[in-house]
Image (cartoon, rainbow, N blue to C red):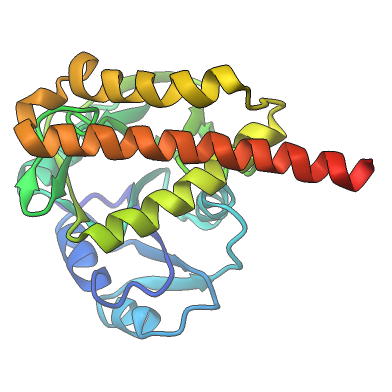
Length: 259
């Protein structure tokens, strides 16, 4: 099953509790394991990764897109699979990845379905499943926008295929973890929107959170997860509101600076 034409790359900072299991799930696929590590890391992430055979490259974090572009630059194989420290490659996905790389044909990348686990529950809807990620990329045909601070996505200059087996994401285990992540995402997304010229209004401050709740619970079938699905839809609606509050604050701060 070993794929000599594949590198599995992880972008990380302070992930000593998770990095070993992520690398172990990649090891059956390839000997080319790459960790792009923010040098401001304070724990044993680099040491653990090296013990598992990964090549460790330190690179100052500016955005996830910039880190992934750096990984594409230093990758030594034609194909790269991006993996997060809290993700695992299932045995079934290992097999499918190996087959895809043998029969890639004209494809320059593949979408991989991801299963998200919240509070020991594998989610079935709400945008959390199937949570397709464009992660298997032909290195010379892929690029990320460095301006996107979170929820970055690859831009490919060719055809893209779809895989069927799952990437497993151990996402959230506590309310504090969910709150911390969503606060960070809300601010980063507001900054990205502001740079793109988007501005907040009273209308989207009210309507965007409601649309997000409806989309998560009804359109994307969050009701399949019952009470947890409703809770997550409401949480995501709240942080949609927080995002637009941040966006309004950025515009106000800029106006005061130039006023």
